[in-house]
Amino acid sequence: MKFGIYSSIGNPVTRKGLDKHVDQVVEEAKLAEKVGFDSCVFGERHQEKDGFLPSPLILATTVAANTTSLRTGTMLILLPLHHPVQVAEDSLTLDIISKGRLIIGVGLGASEADLQAFGVDRKMRIQRLEEGIEIIRSCWSAKKFSVSGEAYKLTDIQILPEPFQPSGPPIWIGANSQLGAKRAGRMGDAFVVDPSANLETSLELIDAYRKEAISFGREPQVVVMRDSWVARTTKEAISDYGPALGKAYQYYWKKGLKAYQGIKSENEVSLASLGKNRVILGSPEDCIKEYHRWHDATGADYFILRMRHAHGYGPSHEKIMESIQLFGESVIPNCA
Image (cartoon, rainbow, N blue to C red; front, side):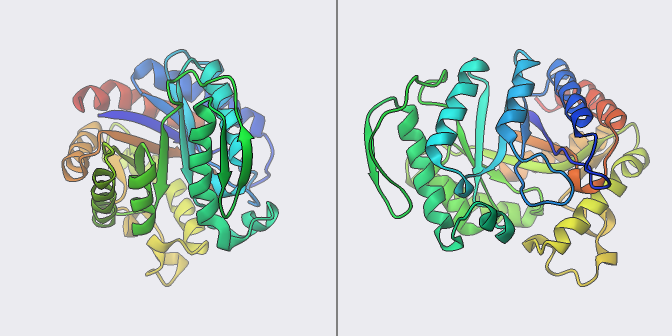
């Protein structure tokens, strides 16, 4: 198994001091590289009230400049919000700068406020995503091409230079629906399972993804993203991580995420009510056991830990560093 970390950067209280949060995330990435993690990735949000930094490729560039072997990238770029030629050019530039350490994760996005901010018609989201992926791959081929789609019409486009990685960085597609999972099977190099999905839902999505990937002649790769935390004891892990995760879940519940629609009251949203078969948390022994259980159930060989929550007020940088260190020392060597 390989492991990566996902970092959100924001400050829900004042939206200030984000430059210090960036410094902290860089230190976390450097430590993650040192103790055996494979990657550090960043997400994209817009029109938020917490100062969530909106440009994941810029954050990934910062990490790439401060590490030597750690892969970095996006989890996810909300591709319908962006012109794919620009994404392709920015990505190949970072792929060259990082000497082939870039992963590009893309997704559909759902926020109406974000769509309005970028002037994107909701009805065109799927076309912009699917055509966008194909355009990005064509850009990375360094060959001249044209496109006449519903969302984009391009004539005699050629993008140079080529990316560092042959054929370009891997494109991982995240989704939380059957249709999205099948799209990842048709078009992606991997499928990223949303951290809000419990094990049962994850298995349903992975099954749909695998069948579609195989039917299109692709080798399936499953990437499972989890809210995850390790501490010396389970009690300490709950104390360190539970409050921040609870606040993050309340945020997602208010946003109406599908995974939380059966919960009627915000007071019911907590680690205790939502964590079972969703969160991987506890002592090193607990986490080793759980990652093996998820690996055996899903066939996933890549896990991304969501440790830093912009919407959840923490945990603190010091606690994150302790958890990364312990995970690298005690969990990764036992999940080979």
